[in-house]
Amino acid sequence: MTQIEGLNPFTPGTGQLPPYLAGRENEQGQFRQILAKISAGRSPDADIVMYGPRGMGKTVLLNWLKNEVKEYGTTDNPIRTSSATPNQLKNPAEMWGFLLSDDWLKNLPPDKMEFGVKGFLSGTWTKKGAPNQALLKDLISECKKNPLVFLLDEAHTMEPEQCLALLNLSQQVQNEAPFLLVLAGTPGLSHFLTTVGASFVERSKKMGIARLDAQATADAIVKPLNEHGIKIDDNTLAPVVEDSQHYPYFIQLWGEALWDLAKEKELQKLTYQEVTAAKTRVESVRLGFYSSRRRRLKDDGLLKVAADCAAIFQDQSRFKEVDLEKAIKDALPDNQSDERYESQVLRDLARHEFIWNPPDTDLYEAGIPSLMRYVLDKQREHIQN
Image 1 (tube, rainbow, N blue to C red):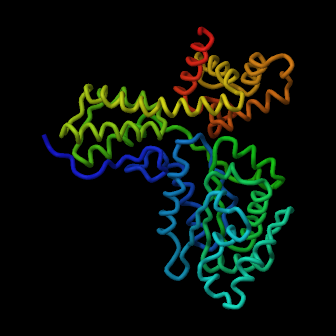
Image 2: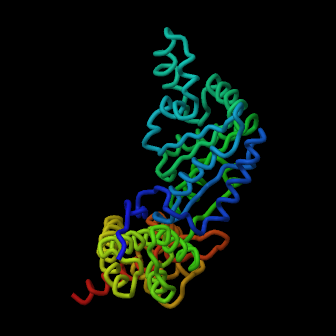
């Protein structure tokens, strides 16, 4: 027996970088190409819209990108990064505070500080989404010297006017200086962006963040364990990979549970017995996760239709939109069933991440298959009782 040193490296649910970022080579490669272009003084071809169900690792990728930026640019021309969530941008002053550098504020004349920050900024976010031209000019000037990568997480929660203003600002800056806007959010983000009135948003680069493949899932668990002297053979690992459903949040839960057991028992090699014990710990956390997601569906009046959709996913993993709308139509009362309402329910289920469009396909699949089974089982229990 060997004592396992240090803190558990796995990071379930935190958005922090995991001990090993597996299966995101394609996305990382795309971001590196964009950063290379920005570091050469060129604007990116478009904004990035990164979307996927919660727990897929969007925030992780944003944090990775923020760190990766440090590898680009030059000593004389470094790339700046700024990151925020919509609740940090409640007024125009806060927005400009994230976009403009600290040096810009420091260089304001003392007698103009109150006017410049509180008064001058507060009325510039117009309903048409046009930013104040003086501040825009300053931002362009700064980006020419130090390109900016602005990362906005939870972008689907933005106010439409606020979103339109930011999209317009991005277009205006990119026309003259290297500036990258990265919006990250749930599967409903793409539809939300089409409703704000910025026609050019269709030209943004969509980056769907899906579940990992089996090999990446295994690597995400095995490599951090091996670094701490903990071994697990392929046969013992196989049920772990399968139970995780290749879902990054569950992968980190499994890694955390296995690492804790190895440390508690001072084991260098994990056996099926430890996997069984770890599954009990993982399942206890997942049940709370499932229950919370089910409660949200119930609060929005979507529980029955979600269960009916889950039923058809039991025999097939992906469906065309028309097939899902038919299932929704069959689940709805006759007085609620019409094409427009069915499409809205479909979007609502996507907003809840119950279903979604993975990248490079027009088919829908489960956000998390085991959540669908949970919702369906609970609905059947309700009917029986």
